[in-house]
Length: 224
Image (cartoon, rainbow, N blue to C red; front, side, top):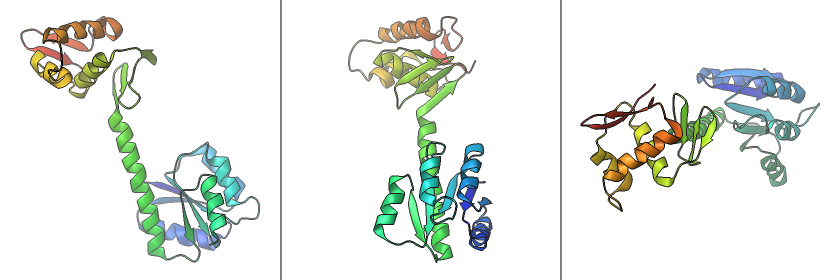
């Protein structure tokens, strides 16, 4: 269940927003001051923040600027201000969207859902780019491999080979399959598979804990 923080000094409005969102299946927390919101965000994680701009103790823009280094969650300003300059200031300090008071309930829900879906897509993309098995972590986006938190330097083909093996962990892969998938017949011969397997083992698997030779068949990356 996604958690949403509602920050508004007008508790009646905050309670209304809370009721609307909880009817949609979200968990909500209300804070009625900017300073309380800052303290809350530094202590707890939220999937989305609805933030009133005009509050007596500290403005929503100040809150947003203060918390942006503590959270990457979407921040939607809820405000009576409609001037473009006010919105631009909000975007500059890290807001993701605006909804103007008085708002239509359906629009509020639609904006919240849209931002949460976007976060889900980003998280899924990031998860798809990282493979972690045992002590080995491979990041396809940053082209980095770590073992026990230590960066391991690999050549391009070693990285592609390891990525292919880890993506197919638990499956026995023949030398032919590996060669076709990693080298794609661009250069070398099938013997280069064994050479690069040996190099990978020397760099991150000297005990052959992960990269197993299946005699007469090929290789298998195991979840040690």
